[in-house]
Every structure is written in C-alpha cells, then in structure tokens.
Image 1 (tube, rainbow, N blue to C red):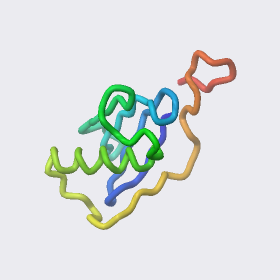
Image 2: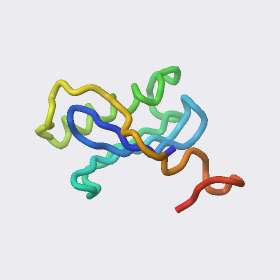
Image 3: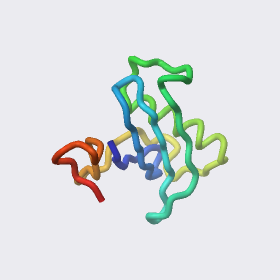
Image 4: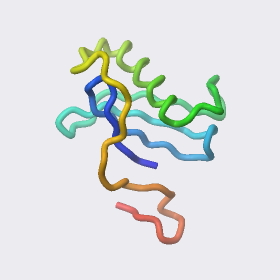
Length: 101
C-alpha cells in the first residue's frame, strides 16, 4: 500500500508491504510534494505490537520522526487522517491487475 496521510498538520506518505502485522513500513515526510525525512520499521524483526493497525504504526513512526528531526509541526494537536483520493497501489505490481507506475 502506498498512501498519503496527515498527522499534526503535516503530510506524510506510507509505503507498507507484507502481511498485516508483519509489514515493512516506510514513512516519508512531504513538504510541497518534496520528499524530506524518512523513517521505517520491519514489523517482522523489530519490536512492535503486531496486532496494531497500520494507522497506529504510522503515528508511532511519525512521533519518532518528528522528535528526531525536531520538526515544528503546523498543528501540534492535529490527529491522523488519510488523505482522500486515489490510492497509488494496494497490491504489488507483480500481481495481475495491479496498478503500477
């Protein structure tokens, strides 16, 4: 899955692949469409709550990234919300019928 979301007034992109609870998850901070800081977790090998939904993992990673980068967020109290619009990809491009760029 590749999808954008808002958190604390900032825009991020998540790229997650694998089985739910055992994904590799990459978070990228976006500013004016430009990719800036990045953070990731391999949920198969790194300590995490494998029952947590992907949204909770996104928030956890964003909080770490925000702290590491000393980011001044646009809305420090802004919650997590998916950006509406077409999803870039829900399945791997090697699968028949998958939308690939």
